[in-house]
Amino acid sequence: MGRLDGKVAIITGAARGMGESHARIFAREGAKVMMTDVRTDMGRALAAEIGGDCRFVAHDATRPSDWTSVVADTEAAFGKVDILVNNAGILGPMATTADLSDAGYDQVCAINQHAVFYGMRAVLPAMLRAGKGSIVNISSIAGIAANYGFPSLAYVASKFAVRGMTKATAMEYGKHNIRVNSVHPGFIQTPMMVEATDEGGGDALREIPLGRIADPAEVSALVLFLASDESSYITGAEHLVDAGMMAH
Image (cartoon, rainbow, N blue to C red):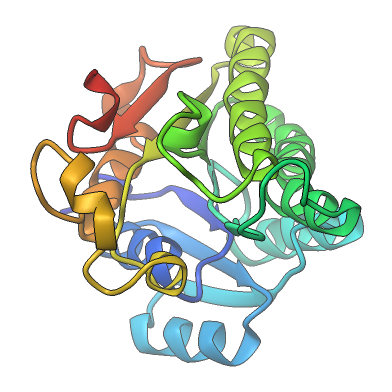
């Protein structure tokens, strides 16, 4: 307990799934947490349930103006920003490259890729003021390899982009004691995965060396480590939470 004492975190897509898990664990470990999501009712209810120094603000991560407000609200409420977890994301359409529409491609990249850029750009001045920071960008095993059947080129493109943006920003801001890492989950038991497959993970189980779907808390444990000072010499790296799927 207390691994994030005194730290202030912004977590996007925090109303459910992995974001909810991150918010609960961060709050338990002493962080002041600003949860954001487009699911306002769910987000407000969760923040009230967690209690303490946990707040919720409605936030469309694809809008730069929303990011400006989120950072300002967080600094007004808690005085600084130490941590950003860019967690919001979608799977998007199940479509081949030939069948993928312009709108489908644009929607996936807006949420999975552009929002990560907007988030990093928005929090960096606050982290510079604080003199340090940790950004954790949630990518996917689809940002490592594209050969295991995720839904579309748009998803793979967006998750590879997160990996690259993470490395570029880490190199640029390391001299300011701001660390940037990406996390690449495999199959995690979240509403998004259930909506895309079935509650047991479908055929995915045959591809997973550990033979099971992960609980979101197993991803949160890594995100917590990267957000904390325990990972003080780790930046610009991708971190797999995939039960060995990318080991082949």
